[in-house]
Length: 554
Image 1 (tube, rainbow, N blue to C red):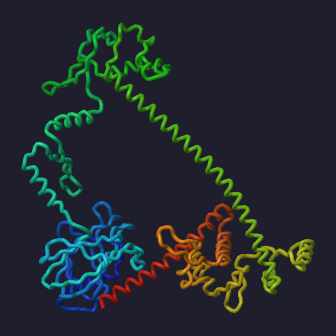
Image 2: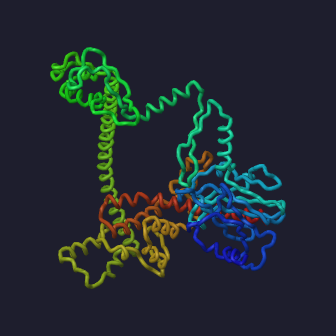
Image 3: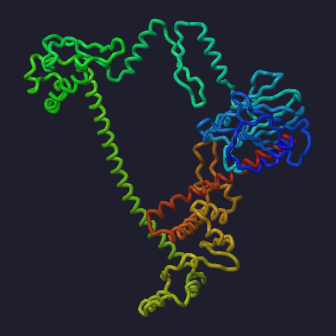
């Protein structure tokens, strides 16, 4: 008992993706600070029975438990089924069970389905009310999908069993099949197809009328024979295979008698006939215009044969194979033509995309220069930052310096590009990103060491707007199409979005000079911000659900 209490204390510290060895067996879940004999209300979980599945139980609070289910056999990434019992309950005890490691992103639990429950006093399966069932993605469990349901135990002496849906065990299936087999019904046939990985029967059931049963077996046997062993009956001469006579050639299955091998003097098999006919008619097949002419027109190689006859079955089989190959060739040619057209369209799109990228680059440079000019007019701009350049930097030539000084006195001055870190103005612990947007200097330096474009964009969006603004906004201001009655939210400020893109552009430009890669990475800014808004809204909804559930329990 003490060992089980220690297991319950350390269970919550184990990762949700750790390997689960087997099902729990009469597992007593005790509170972390409790020591002694279990009392009423200390739940006992058990899944060591056929079709049972529950690998681990963690004690969260007095009213809440996290359940971990085991994966399917030979498929560790598929975790859906659960079936377990609970006993040692207390009357009117309310609990919340969280199945925290589901592998399915979509489930019928979202559309009104609910788990099954029964007890020893009420052995008929019933569904838990759907209003007490929640299916969501939980950030506390590595963003796994979690199914939570609330339940109230009403009888202390009962053992309660919970399941994903109606269980149907392997033993019940075998009993049912044995009952059908003992009836000796003419239209029912049960055969052993093989054994599973765990050495269990895999049955093949055939249900048909007795008259069709023999025909079905014959057709199945014929389909299993890839190349039937056929021979020619009426061959006059055994030495010369080229002289077949004038009679029609009949085909029959070659049989073996008394288990001995066929003698060397037996008739030639149909494979030899096919090979010889293909060799003699090779030149004529390539010159004919249709499959019928390829098999029916006489050739020079057959002139030395007196009234040669091709077996009818062989002719039909070869003709059918030739037609299938022609049909496959037509399909392949159509696929090639479709692929060629798609490649041409993709090439045109890439050309247009390259032109758009170059144009966007020019517009971005022009925008920066205009912003620098405006900052100069306001009295604070890149001119202040230019003075901060280190003395060891290369001095410009006299002519260039003269031109620089002349342009500095005009309103059309375009400053030289400066390093990314020197581009932004630092003042009183704040960093000016442009367009009157200031952020905290310490957070800005932490942002510069962030790995990945997605995390960088999301953190920068939170710094500029804040979570309270983001959760009530959308990137485009257009209502989603997934919900019919969705109300559009106000869009984010366009000038702040442009600041986010410029900051990300400066970051990417330090890593690569490939304009195609830069444009491709910049095109995902809206997607990253949209994901951040969805994450904020989901966390808010999950927090509200937890508060509602705890309030209902209290």
